[in-house]
View (cartoon, rainbow, N blue to C red):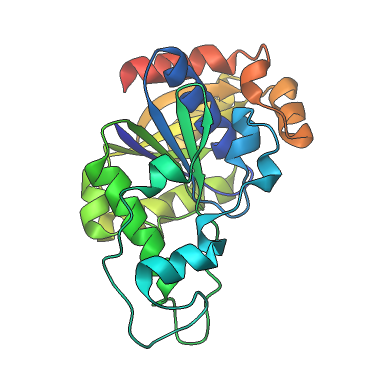
Length: 251
């Protein structure tokens, strides 16, 4: 099962991704969790100790040079477009129970665009984990789908967009749907978060007509506190965990 999770910053997609990964791990599934959002910290949300010390793949200059033949940060010139990446998930991931985590990091785009060694390596890595790995893959994305190419997108089983009751969150979901359609990614579903009442559910359903809804996570002070302190939402007694369990059953 290959899942991509996206949504506007601050809606709780990292919280959702972490709960999803931990609960699948508890069910005995092997999970490869990929933090593809430079502004998030999926490692801390999973409960991995010393998460701030994990080096993003995009910052591993020696690895990038070894695999592509070019220095990170350079644009243009000659480098391998199909670098070897199949060993990276097993050798450069951080382990927690049945979960392997990788941080992709961000590519410092120059004036010539992002045809650069680190971007090439990251895209090759994403393509490998989606097309070539047999565990559950959960990708915590930016508010977009920049890391997905056409071939990769068509192999993603579900693009899950986390939304909260609010106009900007809805606009982001519509924009993600438009971007996904351009690369023929059609399996899109919504998870509502920070739901205070049935009115919030009705608001999202009315404004996101035509989307599949997987479930609604409640507004929960414990989850917000976990996010603020950098601790794992899985260690809370939040009712959201039962919602995520139901979503896993649907998936």
